[in-house]
Image (cartoon, rainbow, N blue to C red; front, side, top):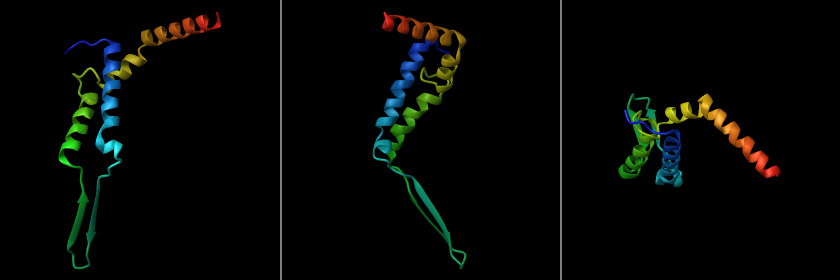
Amino acid sequence: MPKFTDRERLDALIDVASQIQDASIVTENQELSFSVKIERSGDVNQSFDVFDHEPFRSLAMSVRLAYQNDEPANFGAVCSALHNPATKKCAKQRRSCEKSTTTS
């Protein structure tokens, strides 16, 4: 399994989030819908609106990057890195340094 730094993982996840945000399915607020109607006669009528193949495939490929374990943008790995006590300590020290430089 490849080893990625916490920064590489976070940057990769930000890139994936941008890809998802820019996907036409998202930007055009497209909806997926289906309905089923059962007639008194017992006949079943179904209707559905699905996404076009290529826009859906493009969105699915981007989403895949955030959930596959071997990808640097794996959401669980990024959450673990952000929850890591060492990461929290580093962030606390950085905030402390930022405060001291802004008050000077």
